[in-house]
Image 1 (cartoon, rainbow, N blue to C red):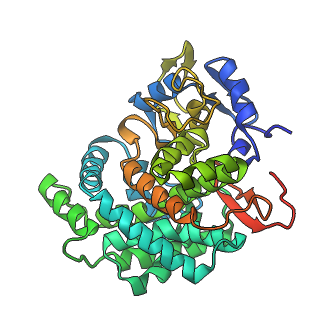
Image 2: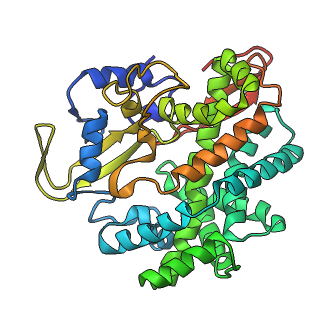
Length: 388
C-alpha cells in the first residue's frame, strides 16, 4: 500500500515507488489536502533552495506556535538553520568553518571509542539496545567534541533526546514540556567553555567575525547536538536496514572494510534519514513554469531527489562505486548542512563497529518512528523476520 501522502512517506515502509511516480510527473504538483506544493526533482529542489524568496520559516511564524514563549522556543528562534539574512550568513560561516577544521581522523577514533563503550553498556545486537545505541552514539561524540566529560554524556544524551521532540509537529503536550525543560538545562550546561574544544573554537571564530550574541552561539551549540542526534542516528539505522536487506553487502564490507565509507555515502543517497524539508514563499515567483504566491509552502522531497536519474544515473541501483554521487539529503545552497562530513564520519565508524557483530536478518526486525520528515528505524527482536 502506498503512503497516504508525501508527508506520511517519510515513515512508510517503502516510499520509493511513490517517489518514483512523482519524479515521472510534473516538476511541481499541488496537494490540495496538504495545502502545499510538492517538488521531487533534484534540479527544482536546488532552484528553490537557492531562491532568495523561498525561506525556511513562515514570515508570520518564526517559531512554531506549540513552543513559542518556552525555553525550547528560545533555542529554536536562534538556530542558524531556522533563520535568514545577514545574521544567518555570519553564524553559518562561523559554525561551518569550525566544523571544517575538525580532525576527522580524531572524530573517527572518538566515535569508535564511544561505539565500544555504548555497546558494552546497551548489549548489542539486541534490537531494542541497537535502537538506543544508534541514537546515543552521535550525541556522545558531538557532546564530547563540545567539551562534555565522559561522566556527563549520559545526562546530556537524555536531555538532547528530550529537546529534539519539540522539533516535531507530532509531539504531545508532555513531550513539549519536557523539551522546554531540557532546552533550559542544556543552555545552562553550555555556558562553560573548555579550551581546545569545538565549543571554544566556535566562540573564538564568532568573536573574530563580530557575532556577539552569546545566547545565539550557545543555542547553536545545542542545535549541533540536536541535529546530529536524530539525523545521524537515522543514517546509521538506515545503513543497518540496508545491510539486513542485502546480506551480500554485509559480507562484502566484512571482506573489505575500506568500502564502509562509500557504503555510508550511498545509503545517504539511497535512503536518507532526512526525507523532506520545507520552504515558504515570501514574494511572487515562478519555478518550473509554475507561479507561486506569497504564503505558499513547498515540500522538498530530498529522498526523491536522491533517486532522480538526472542527478544520479542508475538511481534505483545501490552502487558502492558511484562516481560524483549527489547527496540531496544534506540540503543545498545557503542552508546546506555544514555538518555533513561530521555525520558521515560518525556513521562510518558506527558501521565499522557493527561489522564485528551478528546482524542476523532472521532475528532483527524494524519499523519506522512516526515523523513528518525523518526516516528513523526502530529495531526489535524477531524470531521470524518480518520485513517492513
